[in-house]
Length: 309
Image (cartoon, rainbow, N blue to C red; front, side, top):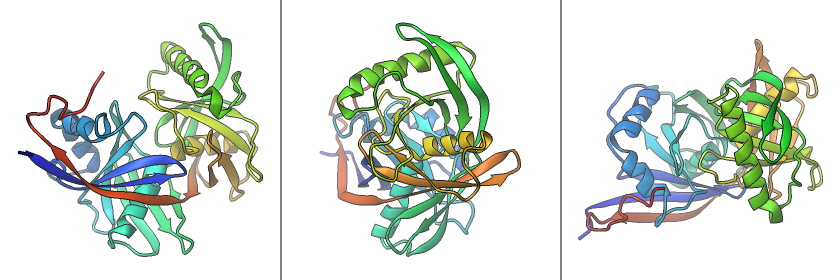
């Protein structure tokens, strides 16, 4: 007999999947979303694994647990997680959450606020069904950091925050082609290890850039996420970090649009406004709901709580 059921809504944003838990999730109590994330991590990490890891999920799935917000003006609170842990913020996931809330009839077109572990995020469900996310304050902390990457020599990049920590390499030594994903993954993973060894242990995403292919795009990227899966979308927090670097270098003016292309050819439109020495990025993309299902957790199943490395 099943011991527990969980209702989830699956969507993808520019190709990157989001799995939203709408019922059956763990009781994390009350208080700030950041505190509830820590309870999730401490007491219910097996639940995270069950939802996104095999055999129910895969390395690429990003999960989102809906929570009651502490701020009554917010449409929801949300905790994002992946195959290895938790995310402070997730841009594509936020777009997926907004589309999911609309699919459930909980919100309509217009401006909505969400509570995340790293702060309040504003998202607008536009008339054309795209979603524009006003992300958390983003900034660059280190410019042109050169590291030695075993097997690849010197690599130079910036360290920046866009809701998660990134090492951004402006010119990838490996061509950004979908057929070279395995090579790009190996390269980016080696970069992450080298960056962490050089005093930036907080960096858990690596973002490689190259020339755009799609008409109207400004650049193409390959983003390696913490669990070694690559982002199919252009990455919302990664694009936010890129905007912070462009602003710091004077290469993109406030309000101008930057079109970021992903490794699969999907795009996000990004812009920013100044906030002190940092920027507030906005990212626009589209999500599509593709499943509304019930996950069944059998206590007798040896892989009930997911396959973990």
